[in-house]
Length: 310
Image 1: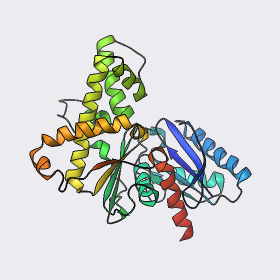
Image 2 (image 1 turned 135 degrees about the horizontal axis):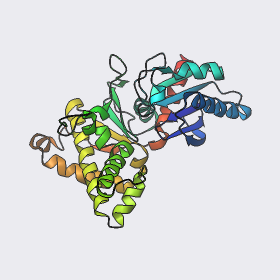
Image 3 (image 1 turned 135 degrees about the vertical axis):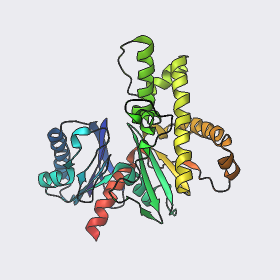
Image 4 (image 1 turned 180 degrees about the vertical axis):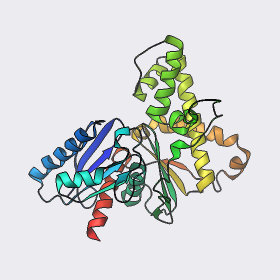
């Protein structure tokens, strides 16, 4: 048995998994931005599982950011207090169990290779849509992490004209094509400019509901979001020439989202002469990740399982 955690900017998903990656129980808590509290809550979850399952062998963690092999977190996505922390070491000291920690998008890519839609595929990308955009790169059947563990920070790509002043990440994929940090963020900026101060929206479902109710601003922001996401995907196809790109994250479970993305993507591809010529020949298809919200947790457990059997 293993305990898996998938730490996101908003929630921490966790569960009890067996050696085959089957989830026996799962739940979630709100992500604490107090490091000590976060570690305490994770340790308590493990301890509670150990009451009924004392045979738990290890802990797998999926987390955003640039993570070194020893568990040191250079960055942690939106969770700024985790920058410069070693979550692996801290949890091992609390729980007295071996811990493996992996970048969330890498974990999702690993999970899809193990149990998902990348079985039998050796060259593919995973793109995880959430608070930001995470990326997992698999080349020749192996996760590519780069020289410093930074490979796959797809959300940092610039996809618009740079502003004359200020932070140029304002035109990055994270700020344009992510769900919370992009879609919701852009809507909140536009709404504030129109109406003044308003309680910000952090759930994309509310935006889609407003669009369905006929709100023009929500429609415009959502349309732009799908274009920006399509541009991000085509940039990745051009750079990596994968067999497929798997899109994961909570929003990817929505069939209407996927249908709309495919429609926008087709329109954008048709307007790029070189890509349009190669479409159907070498341009990778965009598919939904099979494991969706469970992928990070499953991939993290696979990592600790592999470490222990070796």
